[in-house]
Image 1 (cartoon, rainbow, N blue to C red):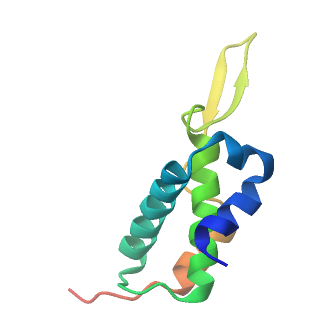
Image 2 (cartoon, rainbow, N blue to C red):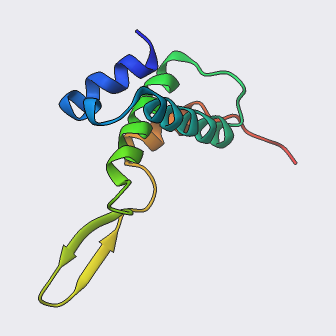
Length: 100
């Protein structure tokens, strides 16, 4: 199964709201971000699953601009910073150390 097919399955009915080109672009951004963070040129299979999850997070954040919660009476907002811990764990597991 391709990453695009996996992404569509995870998005369920919402996948029909986005053209394949857009979903492919989001996957490409997530892939480049993961490769850059992990200092890798390849994408091992478990890292591929994390990339699809990163794409889902990116899609969920677009339009909300990273807002985690809002309060209207006291006008307070909190923002999401980074990816969820489960994605970060996978990224750290496949990160190559760079010696300067």
